[in-house]
Length: 262
Ligand SMILES: Nc1ncnc2c1ncn2[C@@H]1O[C@H](COP(=O)(O)OP(=O)(O)O)[C@@H](O)[C@H]1O
Ligand SMILES: [Mg+2]
Image (cartoon, rainbow, N blue to C red):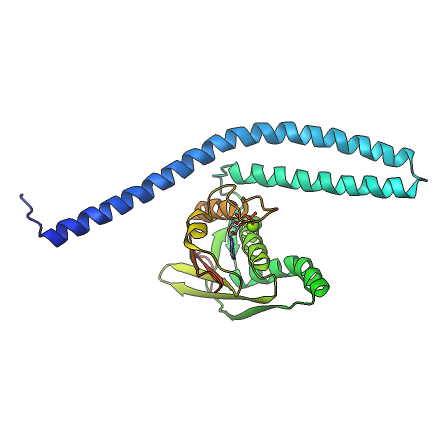
């Protein structure tokens, strides 16, 4: 059948087509990048971990042998802490490239419950900083409604929240408010997390999920790519809305768990 399109129909079809193609190409490239990085990081992480383990062992020995030298022991303790930081980075690298397809640990998660638990975990970190710097952070959970649950691995969902919360705190160096809200939309449960921080320009927004993309001096650039990986594994979606100087909002959508009573 011959389809005769008007100029505008033709224009529309082609523009949408190009846009979609670009999006698919971008996703494909990202998947390829992750695959390659998976192989490299596993090797590097393995080597790195054994080196760190040897150094740590030697330091523990030195600490034992020099128990009476307080200053030296304190310095050695500091070095051990740095080694722990290094091990943590390796752990994150490994975690983010590992493709865990098994859903063995999936349970029904109540979002309100996991938000509260994650805040309890992260609060000590920013409370200390806030106290030191004389700033205030407030958490607003007023709009967290009792929704259906989502199916997932609680540890991974917690990891998602921790990364988003930490980034929000980083983006609010002078204090601010972090607001959570949840609601249901069709078959999905939506969670939105907003901060009143520095916000992002368009370029940052379009690179935010790229591994190693960071605008921070001491950033790893891995947090949001870990978040994307976990959200995708859970059959969910994540969207960023932000304006420079006006804060950021992350909207996460997960399939509602049918097993969870309202
Ligand atoms: N809530 C936020 N507000 C402003 N910028 C953000 C926010 N979350 C993420 N970003 C931007 O995205 C970048 C990547 O974040 P992430 O992957 O967590 O890495 P990192 O925190 O190590 O920089 C950050 O460096 C920052 O520029
Ligand atoms: Mg981060």
